[in-house]
Length: 209
Image (cartoon, rainbow, N blue to C red; front, side):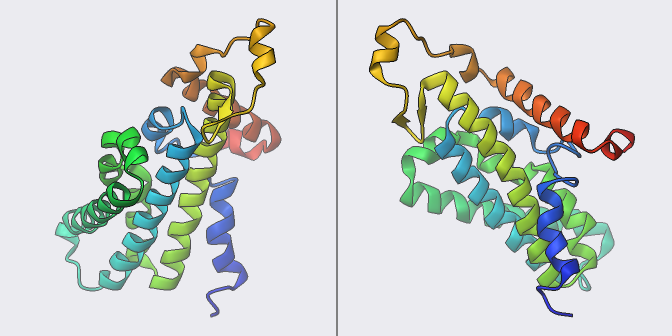
């Protein structure tokens, strides 16, 4: 079977919508609350999770027939922890300012339920090719939620996107004020809740699930 077959492509497209790990399974919420006050750290967090999840899926898939069942969680944690350390060092070397903003949340990728869930549910039972696509798909599904939330929070909370001011100074002189509430973590939960509501309103079958 081609790695670009219809079934394999669903591994990428499904997590973007009906099988989104945040809006359907409500996983990875902690980082969605913590790193989405600005678009740049949300984007970097997305890339970090994508790298860890995709390669962890591949490694665990390659080892799936040699890992004793009773220690599989330990092996998975070792694989994920090693990748997280590597990603953390790369961030510190090339985007140190963003690494400081992400703080401990890069290290907490180790305990991200999305990653451990995909290793258990998919990588342990499938070949490396599909496992890689599954990792990419779920990371993209996770990431687009983070970036949308970050866009809303940074624009209304700081008047900027990616650190660049978008709201003219004349607006502020006329009385416009940034909404400081948007910078607070609870607002991220509120925005995620709206996305979930919109998704489930459009797709009635998700309500029953």
